[in-house]
Image (cartoon, rainbow, N blue to C red; front, side):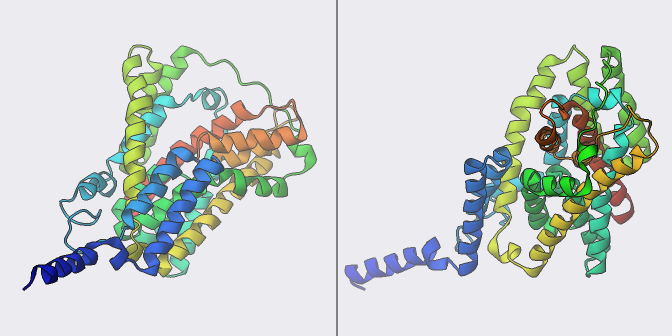
Length: 383
């Protein structure tokens, strides 16, 4: 064979390895979705810490590959596959919860424990989505994994889907994180629909001061109570309350700073990139993914309705002066602190001096606990 023919053959072989040669319409659709995620994060400032890594991960996962290159996220032994084990085996989510615990101030919940009920009521979205998923044909395990989207908690969704429905993990995780980013868009119309002008103007009593001793005792008691109720939730609950203890103890500041800073940042990068990369077109662009996104949106709506309407119902039993502003009911989902900020912003639309943020943080942090407990319950009877 002549030198010229050899060069041509080599160029043809090189071309067969390129993404341009192996690209399909599905790959281009997924790349467009990744670019939209990045655009929303940068232009609209919608959860950029989550959407930028996930969006870029979608780009990584949808570069068309020649089979056998050993670089894809699903190819055994590849670097991306090794990093993906943190998602698949479920050890990234507890580390995220450790960081959340180390960043969270539970004072609003400790000072007004009845706000815990709002966080519990908002978990209605989880079990509503579970029932809907069962009704349209998903298996019980798949329905449980899909249902957790209603808690608006990405790490919990990854943790549960990795055990109950690994094949659906990509769609579930992206759906959960997407709706977390859309909190400021989805919730306000529902809050206005469910409340009257008089209810939106309710002023709540300032939270009572919480002593350092109470803050130290809370994570210990909180863990023991929840873990005895749902032992299957220990990986998430244990790390959440441990993170809070090292924050509040006053003697482990370095540990708390590491957990709430470098550690959670590193894990957020890894979880975002690998979850995004797992959305390969051949696995992600299926009818089930569309259904999951639809159910996820509905579950989030149900959760918001559940939290707001529960406050309205609860107010029937409270005296004047002790009533709760139902605009904080939306904060019962686990999107901390974005849901609480939505409560504040909607409240300020009707009264520029009514600051609801600290009150909303109570059900908001209760929602974090509630979603972990709900995941433990589902894992307990479905695993």
